Length: 224
Image (cartoon, rainbow, N blue to C red):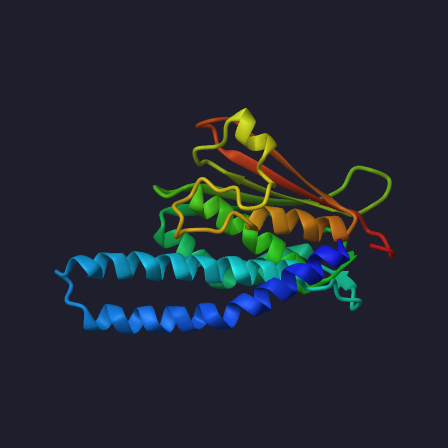
């Protein structure tokens, strides 16, 4: 896994600079070509494709980043509250209601705060994109029932859900049901990799047209 991460980082770094140059040229061309010209649409589409490639590169760099050794006792309630402080308004403008069910006695877990922030933000974003016409996002936290300790964090949406076949492939890289300019299909894959680094797991429960629930289970382990 470390070798794959290093290769991904190398490829991403090599592609980033020329891609930025291509994007700059396309922006200039788009400004200079009249909107009614047939080439204007082609240049715009090329620009969208370039931005998508940039998103993929950023996701690759995030995936390739080596896990930090600076672990701490993380309060997952606190992490989610912090994320919603800047993302809740966007959800509300999309017609999405947020239901919060936090365990007030939630134990802390040993982990990397920034990595867990990324996981939870990915899952919030995934739920938002699953409800383009609005709906309800329910975020629940609770202590794990197993004797190991740890926590469970659950994200449930009222979106369109997934078929059984798609649910089985939900964590595959580059799998997405969104428009090509709306996501890279790496969010769930990277989230699972990060949670695995923490010794945990992510499970998906969904039915077509009946919403989706993603459950993050995190143990409290010194070696995680």
